[in-house]
Length: 137
Image 1 (tube, rainbow, N blue to C red):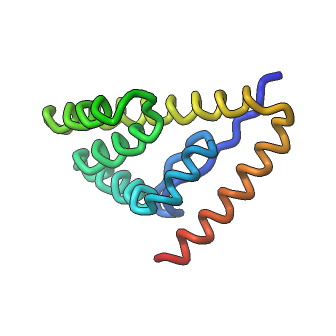
Image 2 (cartoon, rainbow, N blue to C red; image 1 turned 135 degrees about the vertical axis):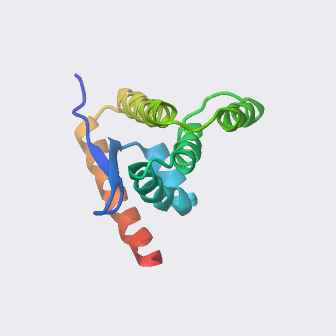
């Protein structure tokens, strides 16, 4: 059975991005709330052709899904800093993050017997996280 995709919006009503929900992403955003807020800033900056902050923000989000060693993640993060920020690089980084989030969702769902119950749990955790994060503002 293929699990339906549940998307969450990271950011605010001003500016957000929709990605697949996963327990890993929820836990990391809970531990690192600045990443949640940086998405809105990154997307706002991209509207005025400033892509550097977005590349850094989304590369950090992308690193959440890296399965390699911490040393490898460190090298990958520095590769982003060696290139001049561009719209193409920003879009590639966002696309890579969305793809990694989707793959993580699929991996988590494959390990579950009751996918609908698991997805309800994810949605519940997401609502709790958003309430907490908006209380921090």
